[in-house]
Length: 152
Image (cartoon, rainbow, N blue to C red):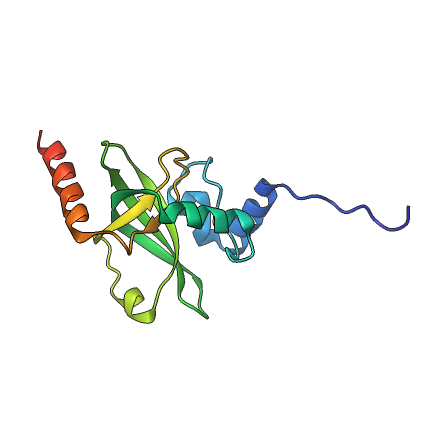
């Protein structure tokens, strides 16, 4: 009755606002298409981001070649990593990982580096996560499969 009615913002408004605040995190800058849901300003406050992170921890293993990264928060080294991802089934896509890294990990990042990542095959929304828990033998097996497929 009194006052203004609260305007309900949709997800596209939030993504547009994030692109205005941090243009380096826009869909175009990250190299992903319009279907990419965007980078959460604070993933700890986003229920959807927490759910996605939990699903990615158990996702399928793939190999990602690091293309570039963008620092999101200078306080704690939170970065958005961009990967060219190759999966075991032969598909490839641009993947984006939102990670908290230590200073040591951050200084070791180099474009062209191949790292194991996890993704959600059922969703395929460009989100990936570093597979820090991956078995080195399984990573090597996956690397061999991808290399063999490229040769033939």
